[in-house]
Image 1 (cartoon, rainbow, N blue to C red):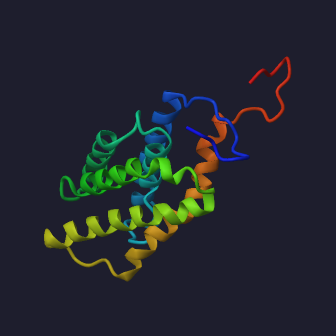
Image 2 (image 1 turned 90 degrees about the vertical axis):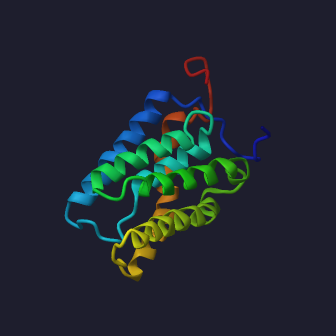
Amino acid sequence: MIMRPGQQLLLPANPVFIWFSLITALALNMLLNMGLFGRAAWVPDLLAVVLVFWCVHQPLRIGVGTAFFFGLAMDVHQGALLGQHALSYTAMAFGAVAMHRRLLWFPVPAQSLQVLPLFVVASVLTLVIRLLAGGTFPGWNHLLAPLIEAMLWPVVTVMLLAPQRRAPNPDDNRPL
């Protein structure tokens, strides 16, 4: 793939780091759901942000199947309708894989605007499934979660790409 001018060359992503970041995001999601805020509708879904990140940056390793597995794990943890998060994560991962080549041409702040519709679609899918199953409407603050997730995109990008950064000025001791 042709790189953008000024874009830094990255080392290959370590599969252990990818899975560690996904499991850590799952654990943080579980802690956020049980913690101080409970199941507040505006709390961002950190696992969704990390899943979209890896679907964009490593679409051959992390894709729809991984998103489905983690969606089932979130359904079981929250006691939600089985498949509710699995469907929304799967749709979100499909969209991320479909747009990953185009998305990487944008700078990171513009990428957050590009992934915002993915987070909105996932949130709306979860809400529609909840309402069809007889749940209650959580309120309009439910629409804040995708906005917060999109604002977290640059932070997650910097954190998860940090191990892959190459040295800006290589020498004999640092050939990469």
